[in-house]
Length: 183
Image (tube, rainbow, N blue to C red):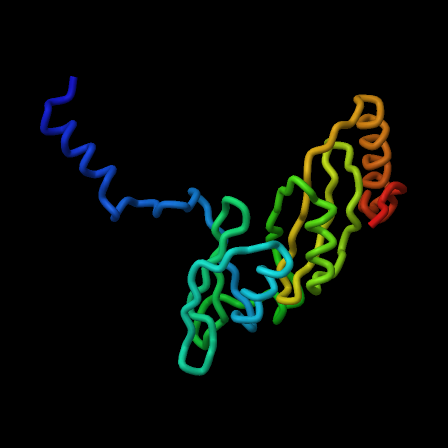
């Protein structure tokens, strides 16, 4: 049994505002580099219903630090600055990361994001792993997959899996040959 002083120190440490992970954050938090940070904040609010938590700008209006909450997750973002080791995907025309966003109503979220200016890169469709799933690219070059779990019989799942594996074997991506996308 720990000594009383250790118990007290442990309780005190839990109440301290200088804990290693700030309240409301998870262990991994994406931080996006963009060209047009303030516009990106507005896009994510319009497209994904993000709540703006922090907006810190330079005197000329560039975003030094932005913080938004989408659902229960925090996303950080900032403009790219001279001398930084970060680049925006829009300047490279590529990215190696996709942000995956689960929703209780993926159809509405999808339509909202597209209406706000996202580009469809993989149509929303029922996938063999039991999710309604699709890919979008935001106007700042970041890729997003939107998804929700759906009920699906084992037989339908297996038929969709076989169709996807045939596409992979042919050197294609299943999203390009899927027959049930409707958005």
